Amino acid sequence: MATPASKLDALRIGRSAIDNHYLDELAAGRLSRREFVRRGAAVGFSSTFVAAALAACGNANSSSSSAPSSSAAPTKGGTLKLASQTPTGAINPITISDLGGSTLLTQTGEFLTFDNAAAGHLQPMLATSWSHNGDGSVWTFKLRTGVKFHNGKEMNADDVVYTFKQQTDPRNAAVALSTFEGVLKPEGVIRVDPTTVAFHLEAPNGNFPYIISSDNYNLIIVPDGTDFGHWQKTFVGTGPFKLSSYTQNQGAEFVANHDYWGEAPHLSGTSFQFYASQQAQIVALQGGQVDVVSQFTAQGAEGLLKSSSFRIIKVRSASHRELSMRNDIEPFTDPRVRQAIALSIDRPSMVSALLAGDGQVGNDNPFAPKFASTNTSVPQRVQNLSKAKQLLSAAGHPDGFETTLTAGEQEEIPALAQVFAADAAKIGVKIKLKIETLTAYYGKSTYGNSDWLDAIMSLVEYGDRGVPNVFLEAPLESTGPWNAARFKNKTYDGLVRQYIAAVDLQTQRTIAGKIERLLLEQTPLVIPYFADILAATTAKVQGVQVNGFAIFLGTASMT
Figure 1: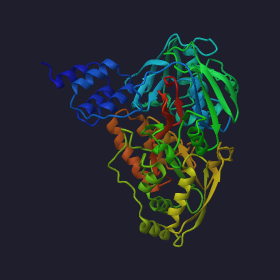
Figure 2: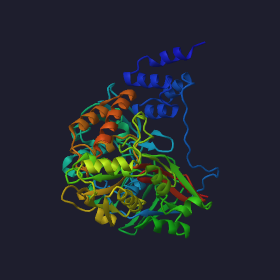
Figure 3: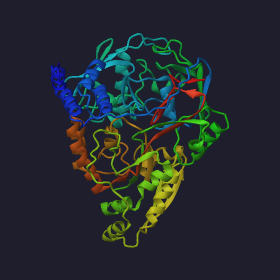
């Protein structure tokens, strides 16, 4: 009888160094079964290979996740009514950067790969399979055949190439450029044949399939030649629903796509109603005006969380809030001042009070507990008021100072701003709050494309991702487009490059530890917690899927 070791040896034949590394991690128990499936999906393991590896390593650590479920059989028909945040600008796949807009993109658009947040791994979507060249510098994707856009055109490699060339072209000022900088240029997107596209990267990247997945909400595939500036008129995509009508600042109507390539949607259609605040969305759900609140935070939603009348969808995530402090403006030019602010806050109390316990404390770096590469050996920062005062005094502010924190009216962020101000007051720092509408907050600025980028202190929300790459790059690299802190550190930039190029998990963890320690020392920003994804439906709704910035209704139904 073959032993587990011999079975593993047989599986190693013809495998790359990356593949064999993940087998070693699984066999040693350093990689859970769930994380092995997730990582395997990223590098293109077949389901047969994954099953054989799990069977050979039957004693490896196990991990489970829960997802909302219902035993009731899906029924056909009906229009699902949803409450959603009002989009802050035009519905343009190139420029969308807010929750309300990204939610609409995913109603008609689809991605090459789908990051199933509840299951914890990638799934095929418009791509059926993907593989790399051994070091992760070239990734090849095979496309699904028989897929039609809503305008009747059949999808092929030309559409994928066009989409990615537009999203990676610096002349377009695409939001996705924050992810693709140093990763992919337009000339690296290659049509191999009508059903195959290859991505030639600027450097090896073991997480690339996650980078172009539903995690990167702008990357819906559109027809070759699409005018993105006029996309709002058609919402043309390949998804299970297509546009019926869109009224700016009011709502959107979608109908089932009867030519959908996958399982036909159960619903006849969906109706989105836009609201400026979370509380208004919750009231609409409680009053029966809508069936779903697409995403909410626990703060102010106690009635939903405690009611048996509603089904709560909860998924662990990397969604978080970042308090940025302008490293180029006094007094935040001194890292001791920034450290003092970070040491003033009570993180467990924040998770308890603002998230009702539905989250995990943060350590002022983007490595969430859900990421396999997070280095858990780095000590957790905790509230220490006496040390915070000592740091302020050493920095020349023994009596504290006054400053302003700008935040947007989004989810629990205004309440979080109040908590930051209250905690800072304990060390003599007086923070004046400036709470703006999201339209004002994410408006034009002199530095970038959003008002929050100019604020001395600012609070911003980041949605869930399958890997930390975009969190490490966009808000923290010296040239990052969302660098509200104006943090410029060559050592940090070099470590991030090393992390992204690493193709094995242990190397990633080692580099992650160096990054985590550097950020604790410099503290350009504060990440107090990582919030679970929460959505709510009435009891008659099932099959809804969510991630940090969208809701997916292809399998949704009403009983």
